[in-house]
Image (cartoon, rainbow, N blue to C red):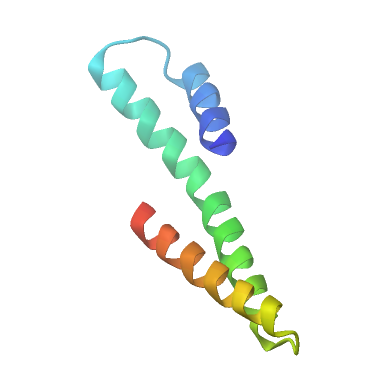
Length: 79
């Protein structure tokens, strides 16, 4: 969320104004700038929790399995 808000404020400098076309261009710019950072963060989080599924502690294994699955599906729904 903070990444998208920061990209929105950065895009405001490139596309000043409040008409509909300017706001659309600003949104496209903000989302395209922040998409890579969001993808990398989500991918590494899911990967780290998936690796945690191989631990010997049963409670941690279950937590990592559920967390990685939930984060993966949340990422898919955001697309």
